[in-house]
Amino acid sequence: MFSHDRIWAAIDALAARHSLSVSGLAKRAGLDPTTFNKSKRYAIDGRARWPSTESLAKIMEATGASVDEFMSLVHGRPESPPVSSTRPVPLLGFAQAGAGGYFDDGGFPVGQGWDVVEFPVGPSDAVYALEVSGDSMLPLYRDGDTIIVSPGAPVRRGDRVVLRTRDGEVMAKILYRQTPRTVELQSMNPDHPNRTFDAAHIDWIARILWASQ
Image (cartoon, rainbow, N blue to C red; front, side, top):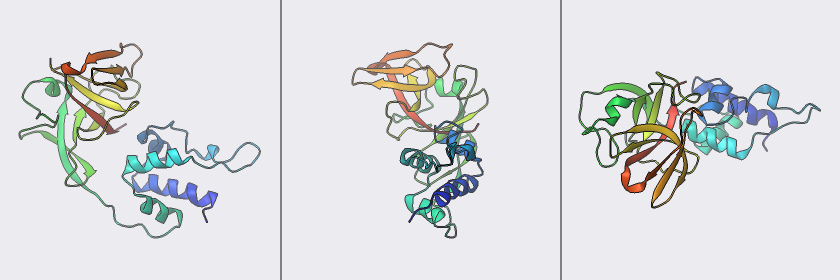
């Protein structure tokens, strides 16, 4: 039997396991930062409010936690060791990402000598990091933030993605619509235009998994 207090305690514990506040956990999962605040846990009349199954699924996806791991937190069982460990992943700037010869056909950096950052991924996970420059991605990403990109992850409408054109232009935007012929992107910053590309003009598109903020 799940209790209201234990579900919220599990969310608190999951955030603490990843050195996050509950607001930081919500942001990492792409939710409103106030989603898990203590003020949201009870209605004004005192009725208990429960987190949605969608929000729980998103925080498990964002942290890499399995259902079993989350349930162990709900039941207050001792934490099991993390499934993944930290390992270095390549770190590129957007200028490097736009230059020719740096990526294979799947959109992953090739060669050696990259700067690296530590990130908790498994040994078979193909991810890399990009350092944000400029203000075109405000308010979601600021100059100097690091975003983790997965070329092999499936992309869906509403996902935050990095796209590289065959001309070498690299951008981070929100996937609005993708068809066999075109890709439509929504700008994160309202001061910058939305973009539409012919599919043949796209070199690769990769999903943004996480950002340091």
